[in-house]
Amino acid sequence: MKFLTHLITITWLWLCASPSLRAAIISSPDGRLQLQYEANSLVVRHVQDGKSVAALTVCQLGLGTNGADAAQWRFEGAGKVKKIKARYEMLAGKRSHCRNEANEVTLRYLDATGRAARCVVRLYNDGLAFRYELDGLQQERIGRELTAYRIEDGTPRWVQRYDGGYENFYPRTTNGKGERGNTRWAYPALLQPAENTWVLLTEAAMEANQSASWLDNREDERIYRVAPDRNELRHSGTWVSPWRVAIVGTLADVVESTLVTDVSPASRIKDTSWIKPGVVSWIYWAYNHGSKEYPLVCKYIDFAAQLRLPYMLIDAEWDEMRGGGDIEDALAYAKAKNVRPLIWYNSSTGWINGAPGPKWRLNNPDSLEREFAWLERVGVAGVKIDFFDGDNQPTMDYYIRLLEAAARHHLLVNFHGATIPRGWQRTYPHLLSTEGVYGAEWYNNLPVLTDRAAAHNATLPFTRNVVGPMDYTPCAFSDSQHPHITTDAHELALTALFESALQHLADRPESILAQPQDVCDFLSTLPAAWDDTRLLGGMPGDWVVLARRSGSRWYIAGINGRDEARTLDIDYSRLGSKVLQRTAHAFTDGSTVSRDGRERVAMHIDRAPLASLTHIRCAPRGGFVLVVE
Image (cartoon, rainbow, N blue to C red; front, side, top):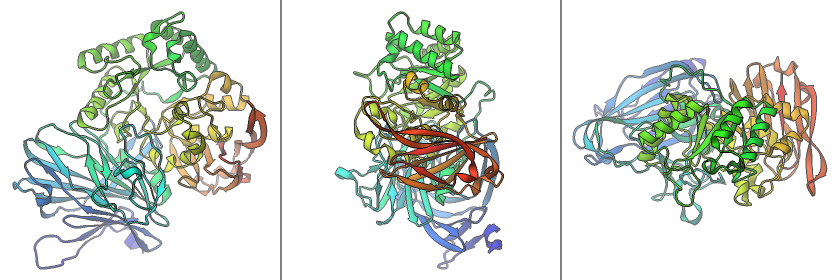
């Protein structure tokens, strides 16, 4: 078995006397996955304890142009297996040192016009990635893509309904029926085809002249077809698609995977010394129009300074600032307090009429250059850009223009009202966060999150946050327009549970500063980038315990997604035996107290040997975080 696990095999299965390849099998570098590929399909199997489990079927391949129908591609054969082996560094994310190792095979085709077309397929230890390459295009539009995943009824899945802002829940279902006739589904899509086999579908390596896609099962509830958004460009020469990505393995394999960045282009930014992840004080959650008020902006700058946070975000409507100062005064005040400001812009592509400003400052190259040059000159650290127009090709190119301009002017970037990360966090390492999530901001808008937050929060580490940084804006001890009923320990745990290289704190300054000094110290020293990430246990929507390492310090965060109390049993063995010998600074659910006119679960703070913390009681919608020195 050891021989089979480590030997890279290719087995040709001739089904007739044809010179064409009909089926072949390739293994991942460590043998945990096997891929059977044919002319028009791919099947991934997950190998565990000597048993092979069918994990994913790509039941159709192909990509058309207006000059050729993908259904008429003719298979010509497969190239030799090529080993991919490289290492790279990430300035932020779930892991600082990453390995890109796969076995790659290229399937060759001729389209209906006789031109060469290819499907490049990579099998990693933790998943599958493939993309199309077209040659000889002559002013042609990219047409319908045939790529489709077959997901049988009865397969548990956590998939959100598609919209361009990716701000929906991930309900658990076992079939492809959507509410109110919905047939469009967003990435990432989490599947459980077997008890200990999981698959997460997404895409990566979004480059210029491409559009992003979603999954569509309108033709057959069991067939999820990749449906690229609008792309009306006419292409000449060679064109490649984004990588279609399926992370495959155990639930830990999925959560810890870096496959999205593995397949994405490396950064060409040589000097990255100015890119610094950090925690941010954020005004909008408590004061929707707070950035119009100079005294409130100064209050949040003071808060950042007192808590020793590196950044403060001046949000929408700063161009209308009043009450004793304008934006120039606010920037000067932040500089005097040694706090670096981030400021907000409307992308002016999505929500425009009735939306806040500033608007139209970034939409053409000249005004974009002037605005970013001004920001660099006055010492602004970065930008939050909001309200984008979906996943079409013009919007994708607009993102890239913004990222490239920001790099020239040493500006950090946070996209809101935006697409999910698709590998840009590697190519453009100054992209430190992206929204694309139903986050704490929604306590401002609707009462829905109040009852659903705990289960939703326990789903996100297995879905949205797998593919990249997620600006959920966590940690609220007080209430916004609508109340939260998660415990204080649950809220504090979210700051380490959710990965975002700009970690915006949602709550009011006075609420956070009123917490015990240990809580304030925790937030003052909280990392926003991680050297390693390990899943210690969980189930989507139910519970999760995740460990993240910064240097030699581990942050272990766990939350209860249920409405009843429970004890979480935790196995720390994946962190190594030496870690068990250390002491943990523990923030857990404590006793029930009366606060703000209703019953709340207080936070209990203690220090104890980590070995004594293998069974942690969580209140309903509770949680904990352990800092292991």
